Amino acid sequence: MVSAAGKFGPYNQAGPFPAFPGAGPQTGADLVRSRIALHLRLGALRPGERLPDTGHLAEQLGIGEMTARRALEGMCQDGLLDRRRGRTGGTFVSADWYAVVPACHDPAAAAAVAAFLLLLECGLVAHASGEVGAEQLKGLRDLVARIGEADADRDALPELETRFHLDLAETLGGPAVRAVAADLLGRLSLLRPLPDAAAVLRRNPCHERLLTQLAAGRTDRAIGAVKGLHATTSGPAPQAGPDVAGTTGP
Image 1: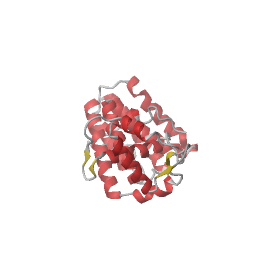
Image 2: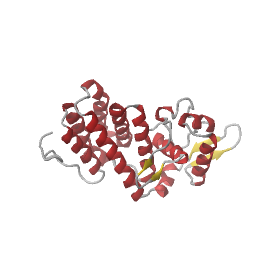
Image 3: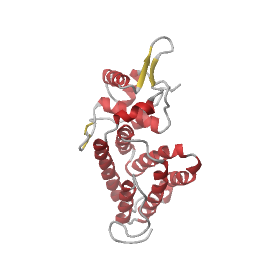
Image 4: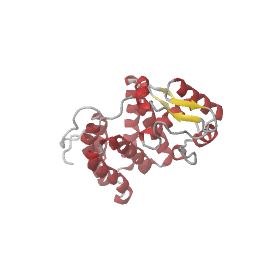
Protein backbone atom coordinates (compact mmCIF):
# COMPACT_ATOMS: atom_id res chain seq x y z
CA MET A 1 0.00 0.00 0.00
CA VAL A 2 1.25 3.47 -0.85
CA SER A 3 2.04 5.77 2.04
CA ALA A 4 0.44 9.19 1.69
CA ALA A 5 3.10 10.97 3.74
CA GLY A 6 5.33 12.96 1.44
CA LYS A 7 4.33 10.85 -1.54
CA PHE A 8 4.14 13.69 -4.01
CA GLY A 9 5.93 16.29 -1.93
CA PRO A 10 9.36 16.40 -3.66
CA TYR A 11 7.72 17.74 -6.81
CA ASN A 12 5.42 20.30 -5.20
CA GLN A 13 5.22 23.50 -7.20
CA ALA A 14 3.80 26.70 -5.78
CA GLY A 15 2.25 29.42 -7.86
CA PRO A 16 0.70 29.38 -11.36
CA PHE A 17 1.21 26.32 -13.52
CA PRO A 18 3.40 26.97 -16.57
CA ALA A 19 2.12 26.84 -20.11
CA PHE A 20 3.98 24.48 -22.41
CA PRO A 21 4.17 25.88 -25.96
CA GLY A 22 2.02 23.87 -28.33
CA ALA A 23 0.75 21.63 -25.54
CA GLY A 24 -1.67 23.93 -23.75
CA PRO A 25 -1.60 25.34 -20.21
CA GLN A 26 -0.87 23.16 -17.21
CA THR A 27 -4.06 22.96 -15.16
CA GLY A 28 -4.47 21.52 -11.70
CA ALA A 29 -6.01 18.40 -13.25
CA ASP A 30 -3.02 18.09 -15.61
CA LEU A 31 -0.72 18.31 -12.60
CA VAL A 32 -2.46 15.42 -10.84
CA ARG A 33 -2.33 13.28 -13.98
CA SER A 34 1.31 14.07 -14.70
CA ARG A 35 2.47 13.41 -11.14
CA ILE A 36 0.70 10.07 -10.94
CA ALA A 37 2.15 9.08 -14.32
CA LEU A 38 5.63 10.20 -13.23
CA HIS A 39 5.47 8.17 -10.03
CA LEU A 40 4.58 5.08 -12.03
CA ARG A 41 7.53 5.75 -14.33
CA LEU A 42 9.81 6.08 -11.28
CA GLY A 43 8.48 2.92 -9.66
CA ALA A 44 7.14 4.82 -6.65
CA LEU A 45 3.65 3.67 -7.64
CA ARG A 46 2.63 0.44 -9.33
CA PRO A 47 -0.55 -0.79 -10.97
CA GLY A 48 -3.01 -1.90 -8.32
CA GLU A 49 -1.60 0.30 -5.54
CA ARG A 50 -3.66 2.74 -3.52
CA LEU A 51 -3.24 6.49 -3.96
CA PRO A 52 -3.02 8.93 -1.03
CA ASP A 53 -6.30 10.37 0.21
CA THR A 54 -7.57 13.22 -1.94
CA GLY A 55 -6.94 15.82 0.77
CA HIS A 56 -3.34 14.70 1.20
CA LEU A 57 -2.77 14.69 -2.54
CA ALA A 58 -4.23 18.18 -2.94
CA GLU A 59 -2.12 19.57 -0.09
CA GLN A 60 1.10 18.09 -1.38
CA LEU A 61 0.52 19.38 -4.91
CA GLY A 62 -0.65 22.82 -3.77
CA ILE A 63 -4.07 22.62 -5.43
CA GLY A 64 -7.66 22.65 -4.20
CA GLU A 65 -9.18 19.42 -2.93
CA MET A 66 -12.09 19.75 -5.35
CA THR A 67 -9.65 20.11 -8.26
CA ALA A 68 -7.81 16.98 -7.14
CA ARG A 69 -11.07 15.07 -6.70
CA ARG A 70 -12.28 15.97 -10.19
CA ALA A 71 -8.91 15.04 -11.69
CA LEU A 72 -9.07 11.61 -10.04
CA GLU A 73 -12.65 11.15 -11.22
CA GLY A 74 -11.55 11.97 -14.76
CA MET A 75 -8.74 9.45 -14.57
CA CYS A 76 -11.22 6.84 -13.33
CA GLN A 77 -13.44 7.57 -16.33
CA ASP A 78 -10.41 7.15 -18.58
CA GLY A 79 -9.67 3.77 -17.04
CA LEU A 80 -6.35 4.88 -15.54
CA LEU A 81 -7.60 4.61 -11.94
CA ASP A 82 -10.16 2.51 -10.08
CA ARG A 83 -12.46 3.74 -7.31
CA ARG A 84 -13.35 1.15 -4.66
CA ARG A 85 -15.88 1.48 -1.85
CA GLY A 86 -15.90 0.07 1.65
CA ARG A 87 -13.46 -0.08 4.55
CA THR A 88 -10.57 -1.07 2.33
CA GLY A 89 -11.67 1.23 -0.49
CA GLY A 90 -10.14 4.31 -2.00
CA THR A 91 -8.62 5.26 -5.33
CA PHE A 92 -6.20 2.78 -6.88
CA VAL A 93 -3.97 2.77 -9.92
CA SER A 94 -5.68 0.57 -12.46
CA ALA A 95 -4.23 -2.91 -12.75
CA ASP A 96 -4.53 -2.31 -16.51
CA TRP A 97 -2.59 0.99 -16.44
CA TYR A 98 -0.12 0.02 -19.15
CA ALA A 99 -2.88 -1.32 -21.39
CA VAL A 100 -4.96 1.86 -21.00
CA VAL A 101 -2.21 4.51 -21.27
CA PRO A 102 -1.73 4.09 -25.06
CA ALA A 103 -5.14 5.74 -25.52
CA CYS A 104 -3.56 8.92 -24.06
CA HIS A 105 -0.68 8.98 -26.55
CA ASP A 106 -0.51 12.14 -28.67
CA PRO A 107 2.64 12.46 -30.82
CA ALA A 108 2.09 16.16 -31.60
CA ALA A 109 1.58 17.14 -27.96
CA ALA A 110 4.49 14.91 -26.92
CA ALA A 111 6.78 16.64 -29.43
CA ALA A 112 5.80 20.06 -28.03
CA VAL A 113 6.46 19.02 -24.42
CA ALA A 114 9.74 17.34 -25.39
CA ALA A 115 10.84 20.52 -27.17
CA PHE A 116 10.17 22.52 -24.01
CA LEU A 117 12.22 20.03 -21.97
CA LEU A 118 15.09 20.36 -24.46
CA LEU A 119 14.91 24.16 -24.22
CA LEU A 120 14.90 23.99 -20.42
CA GLU A 121 17.92 21.69 -20.28
CA CYS A 122 19.90 23.69 -22.84
CA GLY A 123 19.29 26.83 -20.81
CA LEU A 124 20.32 25.14 -17.56
CA VAL A 125 23.50 23.80 -19.13
CA ALA A 126 24.41 27.16 -20.64
CA HIS A 127 23.88 28.87 -17.28
CA ALA A 128 25.82 26.33 -15.20
CA SER A 129 28.60 25.32 -17.60
CA GLY A 130 31.97 25.41 -15.85
CA GLU A 131 30.40 26.22 -12.48
CA VAL A 132 29.54 22.72 -11.29
CA GLY A 133 32.16 20.60 -9.63
CA ALA A 134 32.79 16.88 -9.69
CA GLU A 135 31.09 16.39 -6.33
CA GLN A 136 27.88 18.03 -7.57
CA LEU A 137 27.80 15.75 -10.60
CA LYS A 138 28.59 12.55 -8.69
CA GLY A 139 24.96 11.49 -8.37
CA LEU A 140 24.39 12.00 -12.08
CA ARG A 141 27.53 10.03 -12.94
CA ASP A 142 26.32 7.22 -10.69
CA LEU A 143 23.05 7.14 -12.66
CA VAL A 144 24.98 6.97 -15.94
CA ALA A 145 26.97 4.03 -14.55
CA ARG A 146 23.79 2.29 -13.41
CA ILE A 147 22.25 2.71 -16.86
CA GLY A 148 25.35 1.17 -18.41
CA GLU A 149 25.16 -1.77 -16.00
CA ALA A 150 21.41 -2.33 -16.32
CA ASP A 151 21.51 -4.37 -19.52
CA ALA A 152 20.40 -7.44 -17.57
CA ASP A 153 17.46 -5.51 -16.05
CA ARG A 154 16.15 -3.57 -19.01
CA ASP A 155 12.84 -2.80 -17.29
CA ALA A 156 14.78 -0.43 -15.00
CA LEU A 157 16.24 1.68 -17.82
CA PRO A 158 13.29 4.08 -18.43
CA GLU A 159 13.16 4.79 -14.68
CA LEU A 160 16.90 5.48 -14.48
CA GLU A 161 16.84 7.80 -17.49
CA THR A 162 13.86 9.71 -16.06
CA ARG A 163 15.75 10.11 -12.78
CA PHE A 164 18.72 11.46 -14.74
CA HIS A 165 16.57 14.26 -16.22
CA LEU A 166 15.02 15.08 -12.83
CA ASP A 167 18.37 15.13 -11.03
CA LEU A 168 19.98 17.18 -13.82
CA ALA A 169 17.26 19.82 -13.38
CA GLU A 170 17.75 19.94 -9.62
CA THR A 171 21.56 19.94 -9.78
CA LEU A 172 21.64 22.84 -12.21
CA GLY A 173 18.51 24.75 -11.21
CA GLY A 174 17.35 23.71 -7.75
CA PRO A 175 14.07 22.21 -6.47
CA ALA A 176 11.79 24.66 -8.29
CA VAL A 177 13.31 23.74 -11.66
CA ARG A 178 13.06 20.06 -10.74
CA ALA A 179 9.32 20.64 -10.25
CA VAL A 180 9.01 22.04 -13.78
CA ALA A 181 10.98 19.08 -15.17
CA ALA A 182 8.69 16.73 -13.21
CA ASP A 183 5.65 18.30 -14.88
CA LEU A 184 7.21 17.81 -18.32
CA LEU A 185 8.39 14.26 -17.70
CA GLY A 186 5.05 13.27 -16.18
CA ARG A 187 3.17 14.54 -19.20
CA LEU A 188 5.55 12.74 -21.52
CA SER A 189 4.90 9.53 -19.57
CA LEU A 190 1.28 9.79 -20.68
CA LEU A 191 1.74 11.25 -24.16
CA ARG A 192 4.25 8.84 -25.68
CA PRO A 193 5.21 5.16 -25.34
CA LEU A 194 7.64 3.87 -22.74
CA PRO A 195 11.21 4.41 -23.97
CA ASP A 196 12.74 1.40 -25.66
CA ALA A 197 15.42 -0.11 -23.41
CA ALA A 198 17.89 -0.48 -26.29
CA ALA A 199 17.42 3.19 -27.18
CA VAL A 200 18.16 4.23 -23.58
CA LEU A 201 21.41 2.28 -23.75
CA ARG A 202 22.31 3.94 -27.07
CA ARG A 203 21.70 7.34 -25.50
CA ASN A 204 23.90 6.70 -22.49
CA PRO A 205 27.13 7.98 -24.14
CA CYS A 206 25.29 11.30 -24.59
CA HIS A 207 24.58 11.38 -20.84
CA GLU A 208 28.27 10.82 -20.12
CA ARG A 209 29.43 13.35 -22.71
CA LEU A 210 27.07 15.97 -21.32
CA LEU A 211 28.52 15.65 -17.81
CA THR A 212 32.11 15.68 -19.06
CA GLN A 213 31.65 18.82 -21.15
CA LEU A 214 29.56 20.53 -18.46
CA ALA A 215 32.26 20.03 -15.82
CA ALA A 216 34.95 21.23 -18.25
CA GLY A 217 33.03 24.42 -19.02
CA ARG A 218 32.78 23.63 -22.74
CA THR A 219 29.34 25.20 -23.13
CA ASP A 220 28.85 24.61 -26.86
CA ARG A 221 29.83 20.97 -26.57
CA ALA A 222 27.65 20.45 -23.49
CA ILE A 223 24.65 21.93 -25.29
CA GLY A 224 25.50 19.77 -28.29
CA ALA A 225 25.39 16.72 -26.01
CA VAL A 226 21.95 17.75 -24.73
CA LYS A 227 20.70 18.10 -28.28
CA GLY A 228 22.24 14.76 -29.20
CA LEU A 229 20.53 13.15 -26.23
CA HIS A 230 17.12 14.43 -27.31
CA ALA A 231 17.78 13.68 -30.98
CA THR A 232 18.30 9.99 -30.24
CA THR A 233 14.83 9.28 -28.91
CA SER A 234 14.63 6.87 -31.82
CA GLY A 235 17.39 5.50 -33.98
CA PRO A 236 21.09 5.07 -33.17
CA ALA A 237 22.94 7.60 -31.07
CA PRO A 238 25.43 9.81 -32.90
CA GLN A 239 29.03 8.67 -32.70
CA ALA A 240 31.74 10.77 -31.09
CA GLY A 241 32.81 13.43 -33.53
CA PRO A 242 31.92 17.00 -34.48
CA ASP A 243 29.63 18.70 -31.99
CA VAL A 244 26.93 21.16 -32.92
CA ALA A 245 29.40 23.99 -32.71
CA GLY A 246 31.72 22.18 -35.14
CA THR A 247 34.38 21.24 -32.58
CA THR A 248 35.50 17.68 -32.07
CA GLY A 249 36.35 15.38 -29.23
CA PRO A 250 34.50 13.78 -26.31
